Image (cartoon, rainbow, N blue to C red; front, side):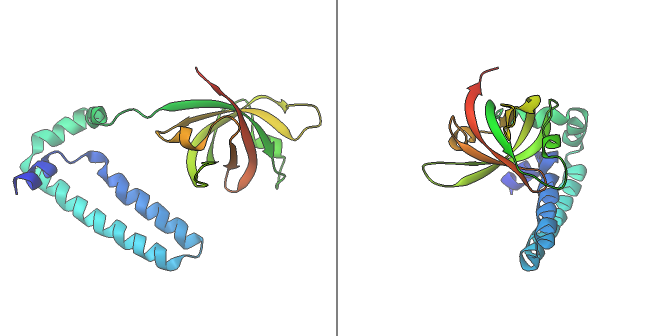
Length: 187
């Protein structure tokens, strides 16, 4: 019982992200036709929500000082989580034609995109969020479909899936291109 009280007293305010993320994935599964999986994830999200409401109600009643401390300093819990490694790569990106001008998907201003890297040894893929910018908004060579782009990612396992010579795909609602890492930049 002592451990349970300690867990309630120290409950991170960010735990509600579990509910949000589970329900977002549930909705995505529903939109992709996986109704059964969507229902299971929705049930998990509802159960997590009910449990967290109970935990935070208990915390409010039994530990109001800790709750006030969280409200005063929401970053209090970040010290316990180590910073993720940050990576910057330069890559040649080939854009695929789509509804509009494919060059419009890359510009000098960084744009958040989904990047799927592949581990060459295991054959497994991993999805990352990346900031992608096109260095000069022109093809690498005149008439070429390739653009020189900068990729900025954060994560502990990025190096397992992206390295010099490694291939990746870029998504922005759908696949918009693919590329190959040409070098890592140390900024």
